Length: 193
Image (cartoon, rainbow, N blue to C red; front, side, top):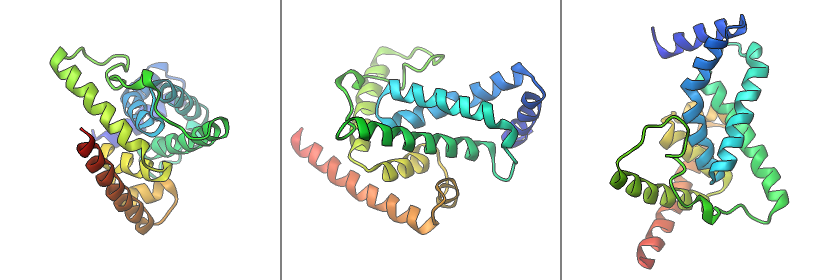
């Protein structure tokens, strides 16, 4: 049974009231949505808030899922929309969203349920995650979202275009502009180190 078929079976069971099916559906996507949110928001507490909002929204609207697209596409569209809303609210409260010093560590490893890793790996992973988050912070929300979906979620340009309700050419333009910007940021960082 494919992942899509399993998702459809879990959705059908969850709609009939199966708590087990709902829990399995959440467990299947929670770390992906959390990490997606972390890369979009820049900190673990916002990523957890986003993840909770996404699953609350999915729970309330699961009956509206028509199956026209994959469930994974649908849930990432919800996550994207909620991240954009969260970013707007944040911008209204502050002049520009920045990563706080408390979020410089290994937020990716802090997600509940992940296996403990060797200390050397964790340290290297934390440093890499900090660099990734800092570099993503240099991008606009639109660019960050596209890079996240393309690089970390392995979606095609067409899938991203469908998720964000924009043309595939717009997605490509934003993606390649983001890559150029990331290259400049990376070169500046290498000069400073």
